[in-house]
Amino acid sequence: MKESLTLLIKLQTVDSELMELEEALGDLPTQVKHLSRDLETVHQVTGEKEARVQEVEKEKRSLRAKIDDTQVQLKRYKDQLLVVSTNRAYDALTTEIDGADKMIEDGEFHLLELDEEDQRLTDELKEDGLKAEAMGATLGTQQQQLKEALASTEQRSKALGKKREKLVTRIKPRFMSSYERIRAAREGRAVVNLSRGSCGACYNRVPVQRQMEIKAMDRIIICDGCGVILYWDSD
Image (tube, rainbow, N blue to C red; front, side):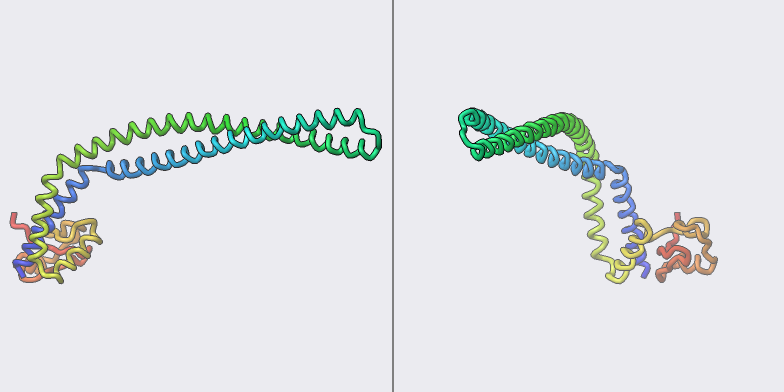
């Protein structure tokens, strides 16, 4: 049992150092991830707006052509109106003229709406472009910082990772399972030393008899207060 507890203590030391290396990076990895996602969203929205601009331009060309054709037809109707000889023909032409006038009026109004949408999208695309440029610059800086931070800790992380793998193979599965369960529940701290007769995690006072049992290291003892594995640190 003493060997198993010693291995768990060593494993906790390795895991604690790995946590310190991860904490040294701060929230930089999260910042890079979120900014990358936000920049991707901006690019996606920009693409959608650019596609809409093209649709608007196509719709405007089609509408202008239709208005031009209708204006030509309207002129013909008005010319014919001067030479008709029956009331029926006259009424038919005036109906066509009214319809053409209505189409031209509605078409020109819709052209104004499309022009406004086109201008709005153009202005937004300029703003989005500036925003994406600024975000890209910030992301580049953060990525470089993260790269440098990872480079400074990579060698140590690899060495600790290998050391952890060796320790895990020597620890019995049931002890390893308990260790991982406690560690997950206690923010990475599963094995904690006594500190002046108290648990080093929750500072709950440990009875003297229990302290002696912990010092003997002949069985694994759990803190009644927080559930971590306790051990005696002779140093």
